[in-house]
Amino acid sequence: EEKLLNSYVGKKYSSITLAYDNQNPDGCAIGIVGKSTVEPVSDDESLEAKSKQLDSMIGNTLYCTVTFDDGTAQKQSIHIGTTVTNFGTAHSESFNQLTEEEKALKDYTDVFVTYSITE
Image 1: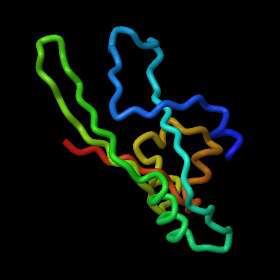
Image 2: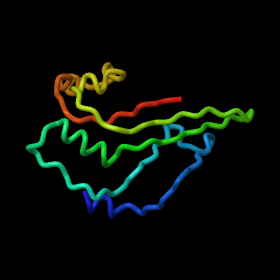
Image 3: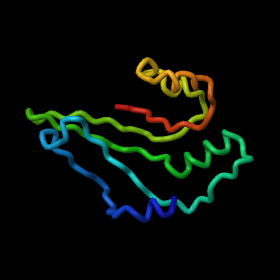
Image 4: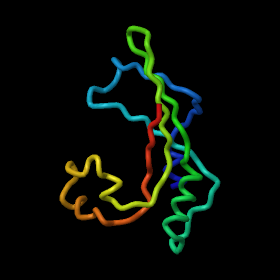
């Protein structure tokens, strides 16, 4: 993990602006990479403990504002956190698009990253 993080050239941003008409037509992704001084969770800890540990490392809120050509704007906040749930629940909105192998994991329980959108 440390080797992977060190391969990135990092810059600290408090905000970033993306031009809608200057994006790849297949979509746009923003990677957020950071380092934490929190020690990794040992394998013998419970899923709830792992969830709390990961949440303390990645829990954050992104504040997004979209400004339209007419000057109006729409704001949303996206909280990034974790939860303990099964694969089927974590992927419920896109479950029909999963492969058969992925669908077979529907009852597999683990720690999943969550994205909660608020106005």
